Amino acid sequence: ASYWDLARSHFGGGTPIALHASAGVVIDAVAAGDASVGVLPVPEANEDGPWWPQLVATGPRSPQIVARLPFVAEQTTGEPLDALVVAAMDQEATSADRSYVALGSRPEVSRARILSAFRLAGLEARVLARLAPSGKVAEWLDLLELDGYVRRADPRLNAALAADLGAERAVVLGGYSVPLKV
Image (cartoon, rainbow, N blue to C red; front, top):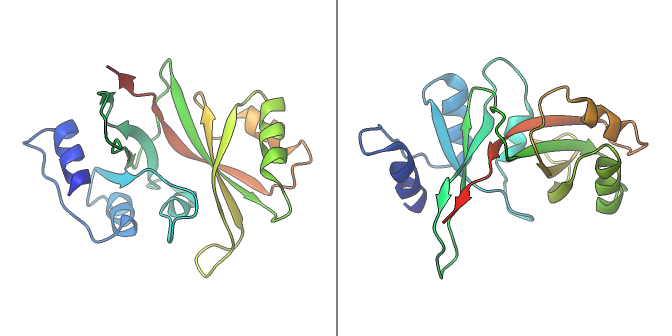
């Protein structure tokens, strides 16, 4: 219900909104063209059944992260509710961005090694989550949040991967313009 309110506040009262049973169903609806955008919780470390590995698939209608809500955040005393917006389009660069990247790696690659390789490539990164292989995921995946706009085939990603990181691939999942604080 809280994400419904967040979506309604951002997109307006005249926008049709559908509630779905899971984040996976939301991503499928966006990929199929049944929804223009999807509003999903911000990924957290150690969550059960994270939704972000679904964005690793690439294709012409693959959803990407394109925004973060609320865009204008008021200071509150409680825990703020944040969400990410996915759409079947590319993120647009602004003057202050964050980007998400899924890094396919091996289990022995440490967070410190990942962060060092990205820093040497000119990207400040934070490792948000690590996902072990399972029935749905064939490789170890690390979810990174990077400062700045990172596009697909960004040469800085190739530089980070070339730094003997032990990573197989880096997939840009999109990103968002940094929300305003008032």
